[in-house]
Length: 102
Image (cartoon, rainbow, N blue to C red; front, side, top):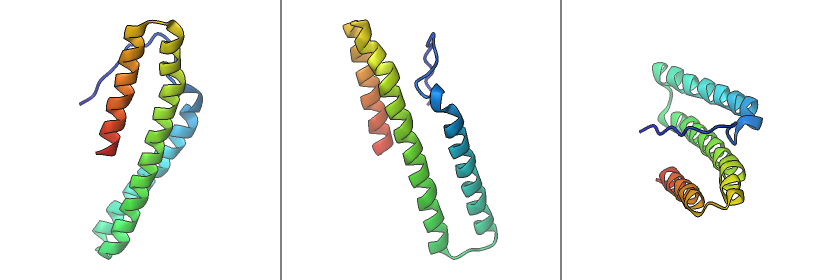
């Protein structure tokens, strides 16, 4: 399920966008490598080791995005003083962290 939010300004990750894109490119390369390993009938444990590395990289990327979101969107909501917006942003972060932990 994809959710989009219309935000008038830059997103919290905007200042780190290039770094995120580089990390994603590395992760894409790792996934392509795993595909080649499967095609080449690589030993199961070696595949699982590479899959674990991709999972760790994705979790690290996710943590960075959550942190950026809290430092941008949540702080902006608090600064607005609008209790409904603050509650919405806190619930949004909580639900996102819950999905990441599954």
